Image (cartoon, rainbow, N blue to C red):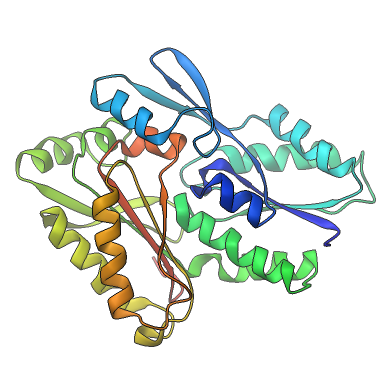
Length: 295
């Protein structure tokens, strides 16, 4: 058993079964819906289906990140057990939680001088963030040291490609991820912007595509163009979605047909409450390993 703990935020958008099987520690974000606060804990406190149905019915969902104090208490529980810690944070380009984790680390370093505490800005989000943590768990299970895990994360986090599309831009517009004008006219004209995560870990719009089906095909084209090994891609591929599992499964079938050497079938997860508060229902997000992000 490793003498260190790999940790992440709940915004990695995987599943509780995955968290337990991969032996990953996590700290939850929170979301307030209809005046009631819930932990974003992989669907244990509020199921994704309930969240998105309530949002479609008109309830507002507001996500909140992890505070310095919450990180401090969470980290100390691990350090007090005599374990070293590497916490991989959701991208600093979309959340302040990375900075909060760094401040908590600073507070605890002098109190636990014999313990190693590392905080990594993943520059990733949703299940792309989960894909990075999954690889680190593989390396840990191979017997790699915490220092080797840290170096791998820093050297390779920019190689995870993120693509997002949504059939309803209302929520992305409300959260500022796309402009109000793009949201209004996009919904009117059935335009589905193709968004990705840039080198700074920020979500940006790359293309405007008419219809979700065409946007899904365009995401596949991007993977064919950029995936590690191209058609011989042998790594894993994750998809997350918000109340559109049928589309996610269709996307997965397209990927599996094009990449027969994929490491297992495409893994599909629901978009969690914190990320979902920004995306709303109708979003598909697609993640794989590829060329280093340049812009």
